[in-house]
Amino acid sequence: MTPSPGAAVTGLGLVSAAGHGLEATFSALFAGPPRPVSPRFASPHGAAYPVFALPLQSLARCREAAPDAPSPTTAYLCAAAREALADAGLNPATLAGVRVGVCVGTTVGAALNFFDHYAALRRGEKPSPGPVAAYLAANPALYLARRLGAAGPCQSVVNACSSGSDAVGLAASWITQGLCDVALAGGADELSPIPYHGFIRLMITDPGPCRPFDRGRKGLNLGEGAALLVLESEAFRAARRAGARGFVAGYGAAADAHHLTAPAPDGRGLRAAIGQALTRAGTSPGELAFVNLHGTGTPDNDRVEGRVVAALLPGVALSATKGATGHSLGAAGAMEAALTVRCLEAGRLPPSPGFAEPDPEIGAAPVGRETEVRGRAALSLSLAFGGGNAALVLTRGER
Image (tube, rainbow, N blue to C red; front, side):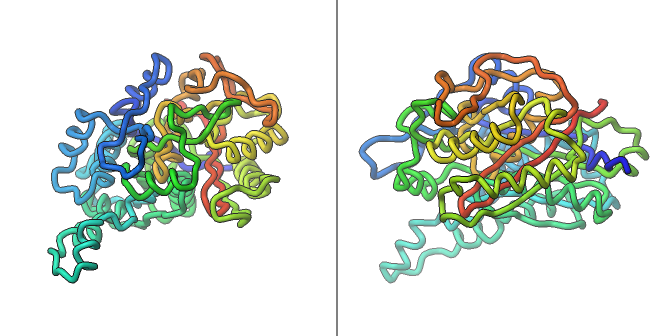
């Protein structure tokens, strides 16, 4: 039996430090991406570790997309949703009466960020409950669903760094199981002192620009932003005669439960996730045009991921993009899924920012220059704290 093509991707939206919009980000990958900057919030550390922060003009455009957004995360999400829906030729009016689901991955968007409020409580004061109310109103999926009037399935996924990929995979299953006709799926996260200080204390943050898969890599740079994919059922897409930019053909998820932060050295969870995704997509390794790596720039993560990919997918081109966007945590997998679809359309990969010298301990390396790729499918990978792993098989559309 021929496998289903999966959930159709009819629209893409992306906000990152590299560009406001999918095309701006995609072009920056080829033209020379931005370098990380110092964070805008105060830090007790002697040195300011660089981050990939949205430029001020991009922040203003996100706020314009959602003036009442209770958090930067929800503002970024609304900006990505606006672009994705316009790209798909949809809007809230055309979606009236349609079964619409919303699935959003996040980490910082689910964190308690009101330090001043907490400190005041510890001092015995009675601060305004405003920050708590804003936190309770900032559930990303629920906030977006209410803005759109969406009455279908609604879920925020909080699964560390694989959250964005897991959200896309989950929403695709809603489509293929007939739970909704349209789904907005992706991830969003803002820069925040909590993960910033946390990653520094874990000693996996690079004091300079990150270097995914490079021999001299020292750690990651945090980033922020959002990405959303508009997914549609074949019946709904056919009824409105819409093309598809691609398809979410397969999704795999597995946990190795090896350590709170480090992946299992043998990569067993990632191996399982890749195997599931390829099987569900009916795709063989030889059909893959490329793999979009998680590629954080941390020594352990890159080594485990690279060895698994080298063993399972030898000869397949590899791409790493976090040297242009930073590690945007809950948004990362969604950003990379959107860029994977765009690279499949273009038939080319950008140079992997920050990568210069292969690491002989890994046995695999991302492309160091613009590279032509051919094939109908690509794989996008995410590795998370707690041993979580997610893999998405994305195939080219016919738009």
